[in-house]
Length: 273
Image (tube, rainbow, N blue to C red):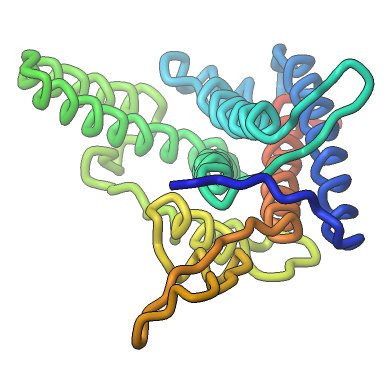
């Protein structure tokens, strides 16, 4: 596949590229804010969660999901930015970058879903559900590469059940609860979304379409120009040009969700006044 660098001359697209740069700067400030939130105040929501579930800690898992999202955004910046001694340029591509944002949205959906319940019991239950899923996915890899899995999986599931009882969740079995799909998670946290152009679920679906190489996603996001002389009956060859506006919009919505997750994390880590 040939890739050609085309200088951008559309003033609106240039503005979108500048917006992308500003969003990268904002992501760095969020990373610094997350780094400053390492401690948990006594009498905070997280403090109660940790007292009840000291092994699979709710804030640790939430923090890891926010870190994954910010890491994807940092990787995107490294992918598209070109810095010289005195200048820099931003160069985007029709493929690749949207998969990074899809990964970020995946992690943020899990984080907000985990932290959404007002009660500690709700958060503890969801953390245990996630650990059941972690065990299942880990067992699949072990099985694939030929590692012993039966005893490891049984012991880990028994430990999850024990921790649920120790946390005071005695009439609910995390092993039978099942984890919601990403679609269900995104639908449940949409109320956090302010001034949406389209729901977070829509942005995730579009990013997922790109990640899986779906034609409908390319048609929805990019500019297609038929190559002169390539038409053969009902088919033709097209030149695909990436769109700064689409990438800026998806990055902006990803940053919105990152801010919501970080704010919820900060709220639960601080003592109630």
